[in-house]
Image (cartoon, rainbow, N blue to C red):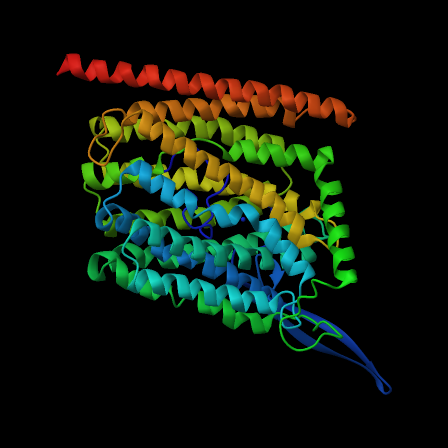
Length: 525
């Protein structure tokens, strides 16, 4: 039930449409390494064994455990994702386009992640830059889902609570990302990839746990109960904050340290902004950033497909929970695929392979909509599971190298800010694809009980995906890396103009295609 191949399928980004060659000590399972260390004394030397627990080749120190647990919470928060979808559809009676707008609105906190990074890097809260913000994020998340479980009964209230919950996850994500970037700086691509694998493996495992129960809990107890259970999960983030090793800021009084009037703070803020602008304007950062944004800005039809599978095909919440379980396992498999085989594969080859494969497989939803899969003896349920499984593996494997690249681009002293900037731009592409998808859903006349043009919508979406990627490869992967900045921006503007032109043509052709399908249905009936 996945669409065309998205760049990311994060479980920790609520309602945004599912973060390396083998060897180098990496392992997909938790392993025990026995190491011997030599200690010297006045009487001689002795050896003692030091047992260290590792996961994905990363030492499970208290800091790393805290990071892994925060990512686990981000994944397990997917417990409420299915409940929210059914709540918007059945309790609030929203159409697919309205549902897409509400869920897209909830993604807004992910667009200003640089602000959270700037706050975390520059303004200590109660003397800490990491611990305090993790505690606060967990409390806000618990509050948002508690309100969903008790008082919310309108689409505006639901949107605001989902927005608050999304904000809490986004802020905690920035904090732990900065911790990961601090550890990845100066390390090899393999070690950096292992850190990202630990993070995303933890998130995927959390997604597996939540997916196993999400559908059955909605079926048995209803959406309000699921929201109440979800409200307890962010408190884990607050609890693991004590594991973070961080020196208290010296010379600050107790309480929230917000020295906004301090000249040193203003000077530091100005330097951070200048450093951020200097880093972003460099072609080796700017072009990959634009590439990620446009890659993500692919029209999606997830809301329309959800209404089709539940209202037309009769998929139950329990079955959709099982599908979510399969995609969570597939996400973990995608992390393992990258960690085991793709660490040293050039980025160009990974993107090229996933673009071609994702475009072809994205068309397979047409089979499900038209019932063609049943003519081959494949039931709707098994087809939906297989489609989601394959696309999720490819999506996760294609997104991992982007995270590794983004982490290694961050200069010292502004890890949270720059990494959050890169990820916010990526999330901006996700929001844009949701809005475009909602507009196309409206243009094609797909509603909660009318799916005549859904196949045409899927075909148009896949066509836009392939055409856009063809344009992106034109300016992102130029072999002449010595091109000056001016020529780089000229090329970018040229390709951006072509991209916008194709978007306009695609929208116009969508209207024509919609009328074609409607007339075909009219004459055949």
